[in-house]
Length: 286
Ligand SMILES: Nc1ncnc2c1ncn2[C@@H]1O[C@H](COP(=O)(O)OP(=O)(O)O)[C@@H](O)[C@H]1O
Ligand SMILES: CC(=O)N[C@@H](CCC(=O)OP(=O)(O)O)C(=O)O
Image 1 (cartoon, rainbow, N blue to C red):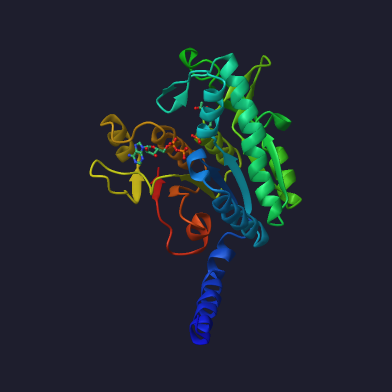
Image 2 (image 1 turned 90 degrees about the vertical axis):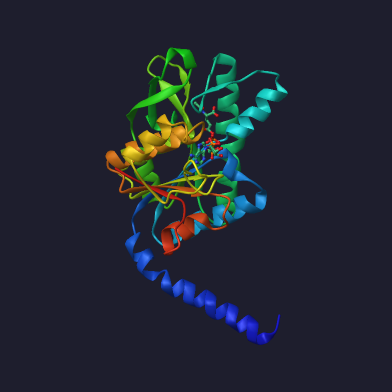
């Protein structure tokens, strides 16, 4: 690269940093819940970039909370163990054997991969699931789905303790039942419940599409409750997008300031969303 071009690059970097100031001021002390879907997790390099962005957020005074999924990783382990699995409206039918695999994969492999990535960037990530410190208590969602849980009681006190100590919580979507059961919670549902219990400023649902698409395949940048209802009835919003839009609507109706469904495959997706004018994806409004 010529010296002149190199200078131009550095000038652009300095300009970008400078223009982020008002956004950093706006989000100083804010609670931002980020759901990282299994499909958005990708390569080690993508994980490294994601982790660096999260540590940067913490560095500039934001309180980030990561809630992760891991559907594809659960599928891979169930395949290895030759356990068949099916989804109904984006939720995995979960019998006892499946529940054991779900907990091992989410609280073990996936959770620790994210924690390790954050710590490698100089952050202090701590992994937990909804079972820790009674964070999420669940009831059965629907008997037909087995051990799929709906959060009914939240205890976010532990998260506030972690914020005070500069620790970044990384949460696996597993909940405890009142009678000693373990429940499998859809990752989006868990992220929404956590965001609501914290009255979060932002909920970002990171996935592997550029946003919620209409029947012609175009991303809709802003959706209201009525749009979501209509598109779901028409089957335009389907599969894994159903829990996302349900979560987004519930969140904005229950104290979360804004919820966006974002393409997590885009490098620096969370920084783009919080600290620039170039946020992409679909914003859901009440
Ligand atoms: N209207 C829609 N717009 C965008 N994606 C949709 C829509 N309806 C269904 N989908 C599907 O939802 C998927 C995202 O959900 P999911 O696979 O559960 O993601 P994640 O693992 O990130 O939680 C997309 O990859 C897409 O196949
Ligand atoms: C009840 C239910 O469906 N739980 C999910 C939990 C993981 C998840 O949500 O993963 P993604 O975010 O990667 O889709 C599952 O078993 O796959």
